[in-house]
Length: 258
Image (cartoon, rainbow, N blue to C red; front, side, top):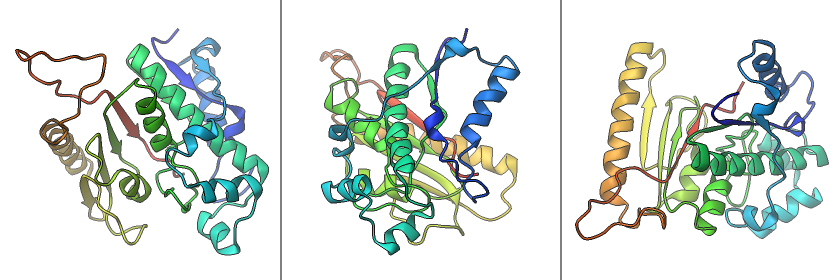
């Protein structure tokens, strides 16, 4: 048995067939983990869909209404780049619930993995690039609202810039956003994260790892300096102690793309 939990639901698969976004990958990863005995069935937890209360901590009422009722305009569907269906709506609500569950288990066990989610192109009032709900943002706001975490660091290593996440948390000192991505790639424009590392085409592995180490160092340094309200209720500080130098929660986005 693993010392941490893996979050997965069959509902993550949109059954899109031969689509540029192969949602079947979530199921295939689970099957591979089981086949190679990387994980056992008891290592997996199945999430519930995120409650609307948590979704609305990030997304506008109008956008949530459109998603739940299917009242998206042709342009909004085109911008999403995936066909709309009730199954699609359930999948993204499940992904948000999965990222929230993963965060809760990470606080409990030290680490957790959500096989779905990472939909960093979703903005409060619209979706784009396969992303309709920003599950990581929903999870962070849900834990903050419940007092489980005060601060978070988002480390986004998808090939594309995390534009939705950057826009959602812009100006919020409790959440530090780091996006390391291919510069000459979607999206355009790229709203600023707290720290952006735009990589040129054909960046080598060694250069990538060096820049990542430097970016993480800078992120933790800036997080410590800038996050005055960085302490959770579980980490009290007296006048004789130094403030904690890490956020309560760290989200690593490996990339939701194929």
